[in-house]
Image (cartoon, rainbow, N blue to C red; front, side):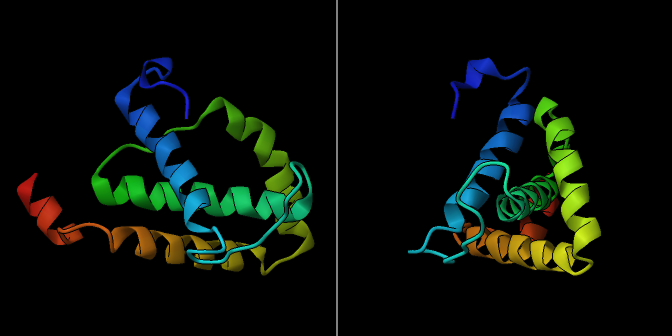
Length: 119
């Protein structure tokens, strides 16, 4: 992760941190999620979609805004290509993102409802 000062806001940092943490959760010793290993291949594209969906879930749970990043424009064409080629890819990506979200949420000592009530 780049230094926090490299981001335009704390929310932007949190969003990217959530994205990278979803990748972390996929490691063989955690959720054992294996998609592509090579940047740019279709399987890697699915992993990026999982990380982005998971990041949106995390930010939503924390009450943080999800915002588009410059990297989204370059990923979007790849995501659309994969989603057009495999109509079930979005369901796979969403399922894997939800699994990562649940795995990471289990580390929290508060429930989402308690967090929202405290706000």
